[in-house]
Length: 596
Image (cartoon, rainbow, N blue to C red; front, side, top):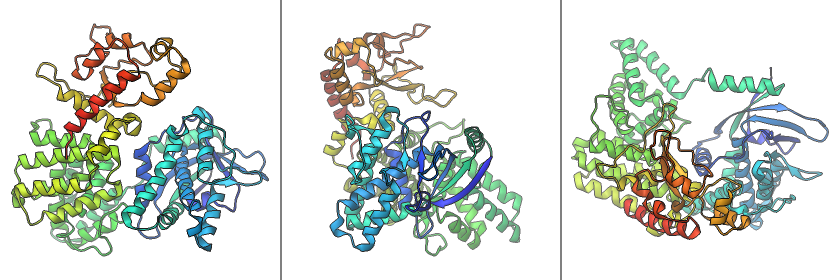
């Protein structure tokens, strides 16, 4: 079944010395990664310390070579999103270096030549990675290569700058340029550093004999056994240390550990984040760990080996107390707990994708008595952080990789102050780095759903909740049994291709003009709303979507009682003018809801 298993660095997978290409089969979905995943990849590479390359996961491929003298074709059954994104990062690096050839020395030029050969093959020139052709993915990719200085034939694509693959490539170039500006380094230096990090990153390549073998393996990897995680290894070290120390009952230690994990919940991301944030928040008072100024995924095991080895009993007492606080921060409340105003504020912070700031809330809540902080102080700071993250996650300011250092520096600043002074200090620190009102408003006025769908949903729900009365209040974050939200984002003007004739007529009567309007405004705030109960309004007409009822006579269209939809219900037509007007109103309301 499995022909080979190799854990190899990227520079081997995409070696200039071979003619291996990676082809995405036609049945695969189109490229779908968004800004959040692009930033995750970039930041994970930045997070790598030393020569150990970041682990990018596993790809599964089938050898579909027809002419080995020409090229070796590996068909990607699993891993196309990672491989495509990685290739776009390399393309962005190529663009940064190629446009600055005059600044490159002989070794740098060799790196640039090798990078080009990682992206394309020669005689004839052709792409090494070949996305599937659905929704012009392959054409978009060829254009991305062409735009970064690679001499490859690329067909003309309409609206290329707004298409996902080109936006990903441009986003990586912007990240490189921003990092250069933030660090005071040259763009060439940063680009070469990122090239080294990307080349040293590793992937496990599983090559199988057939498509059927690939799918069996894919199901096995995703549905059955799970590899040991750093948290598992920390637990093993904890129990091993307990077994060796007199006076410590191993069963008691195991029970305390299980209580801690119960507090953190089943989500491994939350568990790992807690162990990193706990060390980073309190490292000044913890046993010293050499060469570990911050906890990262790479050094987490070594850090906790040191903490456990220094004083197991003290470690267990302190870490479980921190876990009890973190439980509240992530909203893992017991059924009998009655949520307070602080719990509501913390829940809003989590929904605003504010988990990087949990390090600060952990510090404040665990030290609240010494810092003279009331629940009101903590609630205010939590809401302030939520505002900060709504703005940050939409504008990209400040950069993701700076957030950990930001909150660690805030912790350093507030060690010697108390009460109201802490609240003001946090506000001042966030103001210094947050995007301006003008930048925030500009993003709110653009294609917010395509920029960050999670932020779009948080903003829409917040706007709807702001208009609640006691009679109209409802839980817009309610989930179904399958964990999907019961209330979901609906595009008023449909986002799908092939607009129905009713919409074409409303947008001017010409199909091409209607499509152009759709491209410009479909994902803007003014064209978005919240509907509930699996309304599935899709491409239906405007009037149908306004008045849709379910089988029991409940309104599930725009006439669902939310004040957010009041102007939509009263509109007779829905065209570019209506959408732009509503966007302007909702963008200003959002700016007012989330001040810094």
